[in-house]
Image (cartoon, rainbow, N blue to C red; front, side, top):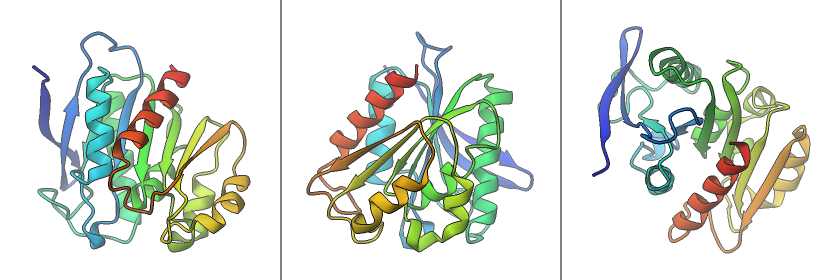
Length: 212
């Protein structure tokens, strides 16, 4: 039976609701930190894409943590338009590195979670790469594009019917990033990826294995 631990990650006065899986056989491999889409548009850690990735990681016996940003679900605090949420990501990174003793961390973010999560890439040398699913560059602004620049390995997943993280601007934004980087275009998928969760999750697993 899979053992998932429900817990709270403490960020000063804020408690972040989280769910954690620890691999029993690959404890020295990287852990994946998953960041959910925009809270003010219904995003939370039980989103279909987040759940698809989280469950697929568990199926493959890969350690992972998903969490709710401040003010979402049972997480305390209130939404802060990105600044506090970036601190939430950094807090979860510290939790995985210092409390759970992981030496390597991979960030996987979807939509708003990609913009915020991937922006923490240079926060710690224990972060070895990131996976971005529909990074909303135009919606979030240049700040998060600049913060997410890195020479660490990067995977960008994008649906070719996406009109929120605009597909027609994907190549322009993708070209901004330094190598190493790869892109995976999901034919037929819009921003919400209903029916494409398995495809996305398999892309995440394949990239993870290339990093390990």
